[in-house]
Image (tube, rainbow, N blue to C red; front, side, top):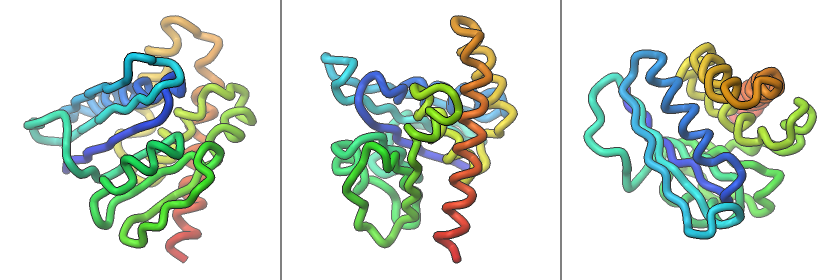
Length: 186
């Protein structure tokens, strides 16, 4: 089992954090994991993306030319990285930030209103965690328990009051992805 994931959006949306959470959770599960960030010099407001790869075997490269899953949080990222999803792969899109739909028919595209769902969970800045939950709800790896543990460790170290809203955002993402995946398959 190997999963190559690219996450992209604007700096400040938690793109790199989402990748770190995923990679750390994969390691909690006993998997090999890499996390490779990339961002422009403008940081907040500029473009940011990262590649997270996790596998039950050693990983030869932290980057790929084509990905099993691409998660995008803005329109420019969909335009740039949407074509890099493997045929039969998964595209998770923050529909609250991406007004134009993906026209690929050879991938599964799941649209998640991440920002409003995060706001409803009590922390608008956790749209990235909602999308991470969507990924978990569809892929099932890394485990939800490991992601929750990483959130407690990483978020709790600096902002313990944000642990529960982030855990709630994660669960909301899992639920909405499972609902929308069922609708796509029906």
